[in-house]
Length: 557
Picture 1: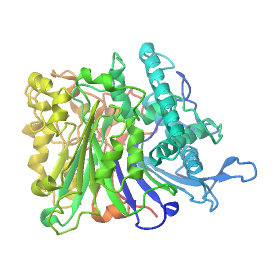
Picture 2: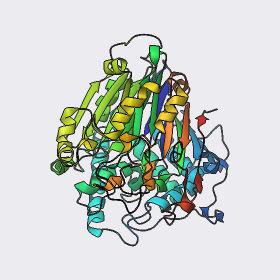
Picture 3: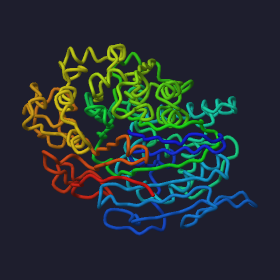
Picture 4: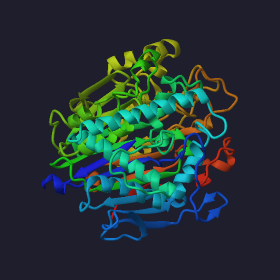
């Protein structure tokens, strides 16, 4: 995940504007209990599912006499919230969502209306993503009943505990933002289901509804914590690569990330949210937050994953992005109520501290946070960034205490350096190739790098054949032979790999701009094509057949 956050200095709290650009996989849906999804009603259907219009703009209006919210087409000046969605997935690999709210209305109304209008412009993509990725997760057909019952109970207890904390801490800006986050999700779910009622007091969220996909990262750890027999995460499976690169002479600072996931998750939306919440921090800010997953391989730590006293990662991430003024503050907010789920290494790059051409300011440019169940470690790594000129992240914890506590030493003993922080394939490739990054184009080439057939650092000695497409900056596990021999699951042939690339720099970040590529890498390997893939029977509704897109620059009006 990558998030760019930018704000302008000054102004009262009541005039504060929070603007967030989020690059995430599209939130899918699971609508009621352990049942199936509801298809978008009244929409045109094609051979691959519901047809999404090329562009759609809608607004949410408030009837001041009745207090009712309603959806209308177009962008209205009196709207509580508005959104525009442009679907260019078949042209660029991306859809684009821009959403804004009005400060004339209270924060709760803005948040709920934001969810409403997002569902209204993206319902077809929501439906198709759900069908592609979670149609049978906890129902309606074959599913693990015991685990699903435990998951439902866990989520219900967690939601109830958060509701109690929101009521007990009505003056807390932290719990206010938690409530706004949940209200936005509530509005999304209500709008998609066609039953819109703004909640004025306590409200409920279906534990196996929209929430299930919103916390897809948290599920990676909830599954083993709740003893699911077959978990989503394969042993050793990569989940994102990231590189922060200081260019020669400190002339610029580049931040890049690629998401690793199943290819069924390639319905992607680049989103820009502009919320005019009244309770937001003062001051100016401009930073990028990004993460790669480090997971947890120590079963003894799952005891720390409890429904009470914790806020799941997806909520803590949003709250920290909205409230923090710098990296240290972001870490302080994020580590509260550690859920021990979606365990990541987080990087916070603060561009307002970085001065091109100047030596290290000593601190605050780069903050690193690593979370596992029962532990969060934070450190300022600005000096290390300026000394080494780069920080690479590749699904392994950098802090020795986190590395040891998470169970990785046992995996190093069993499988060797593949699981070590400095000896893993991506660690070595980043170390060797980062010096070749001197501009945006060379950064893109490194982040899309996969020359597994010819690069000795991509070899797996215990594998047959030795070259392995998982061992690259942007994985292509679909290219591993199905009949090969592999020591652990991540190295097998899988419908999995790097599915995008995003990069920004000082100039672009100030305008919430970035360059991006969607789809698996095809620089040194053949482009991915569903119809010729060994995974062509997997549902991939709404996706292009051939994923061979060029970089685009993302900008906003």
